[in-house]
Length: 282
Image (tube, rainbow, N blue to C red; front, side, top):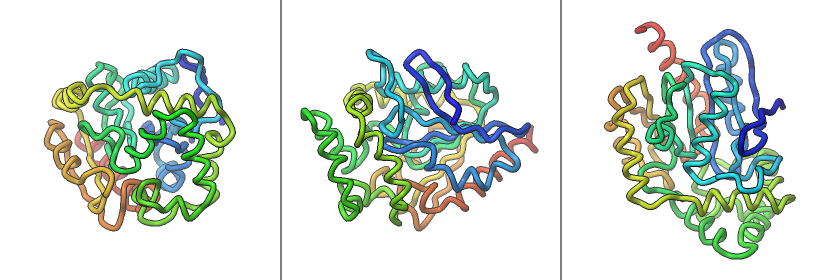
């Protein structure tokens, strides 16, 4: 994959190319851009899909020593990514990672023309739910992240409620999950990058203020939430749609947090119709 050199380090990304509207798709912790493989396959004919692998544990090249990988730091990194590739009027699509509220609050949303927020961290749900609490506890212990992800080499442990069992209703294919976890298994530096993020959550008051700043995002926004989500509360989706001045909510049945895994066809259909309706109205 190509990579772009940013102030914090190198970021790999997939770019389908083409002249269609730009859609940038972002993933969450301990994953990479392959989370979006089915959605991209559906959209790439008509849209330019750009899928970076964020430094959240699934990345293969460690970030620079001293890089800010807090929640705010990763949001700034996303903004720098858009700047460096000169992506304009971008449709930013997020799942699991809740960086939209930070991007808007920090005033780094100038290249974002539309938002699609799918089941993700929101308000003060950082790190989210039982899996997030388990990861946070591991990050606070010396060698904790190595131990936590070492256990995930055993496939049955991946479906426990405190690991990945509440993230997707159906098991993520073994080879995909192995690819997500391989950098964490192999590299102390990658584990250190993830630890910075997990422990780099701002105070609750800051998180709630960031969420309130979504009221200033006056462009089209679609909130897509898993109706059965056990990690990202469905009421958060409803509240986000209410905060966004041009927000609209769709709840998807038969899915947990990782909608791109559980319901990729339905999610791709919603993204396509959202962009098509927005283009027709503009």
